[in-house]
Length: 82
Image 1: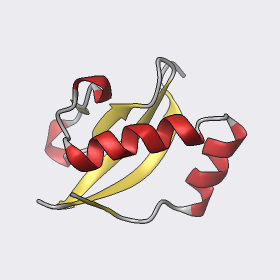
Image 2 (image 1 turned 45 degrees about the horizontal axis):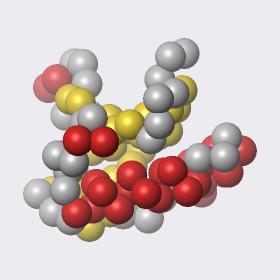
Image 3 (image 1 turned 90 degrees about the vertical axis):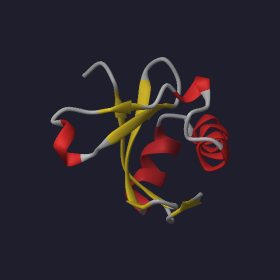
Image 4 (image 1 turned 45 degrees about the vertical axis):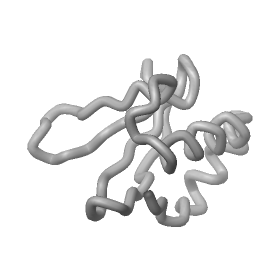
């Protein structure tokens, strides 16, 4: 699985919230196995838009889309409970 480069604003957000190492760990799981249990990948509503999320930790999630069968683009990282 290929993961497109992360937008600079997301990188800044990860650094600001001390999530860089956890995010990178989860990204490795995502790259090797989208169904890895620690990711808890979810298809978000509305389902027809095909936005997915994976868990970074208990508080933060990353939103992503499949550009094609082998390419993922991370489009956001946010506090899951806001």
